[in-house]
View (cartoon, helix red, strand yellow):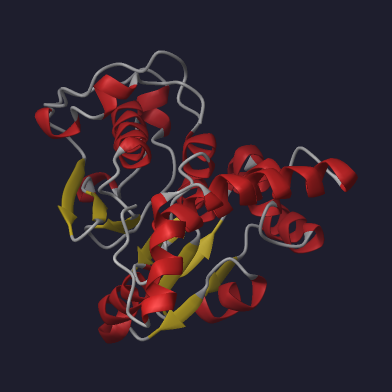
Length: 274
């Protein structure tokens, strides 16, 4: 993860107030809720900063094993707040420290190296895709829709295209970007954009079941596995195999690996350290 905050700043997360993001930590899970419903949860510089800061905290906190992203209001996220980025400002109560460099939200998600689940109850548009593409899982209500309208406005979803290419076939991505289509959750699932589509009344239960399932297993092993996955994007061939061997040696040194082996010998459930 590129350095936006120091470790000390990140671990002071609970001391700061956020204007557009709600945070709740319970049972090794950090739940982040986009809370700018009057602006359709559009991503302004403050919300970008708050998301980045919260994920930095999640990355550095040993107590956070998984992250859930939700949203309030009738739109999950309408993308970037173009008026805000054009210079129109608004008063906020955010006390989150300023990052040391520019926030690139896609990089912040991929550098998290922990399970991140998007719970999508409503439409996702434009830059909102940067959030769902950055998550390891996306559970969506079957009433939610997904659209990239940029070409209707003389623009193009450049950053979103890059993020989508990490999880979807190129021709599907290009078609989606060029035709400004809106698709439902069922089609988005077939495309690989959504992990699972469920009825709205089952969304929370499905997300919780997924979280419970993930938390059964070694948080250290999963973290190192996600780090290795990201590293593979920049290496290949024999070097990739060497790197995987190195990552295995790192995993074998963790407290979780020792606990997992001891639990297997004693025929009991492991108690993970994280």
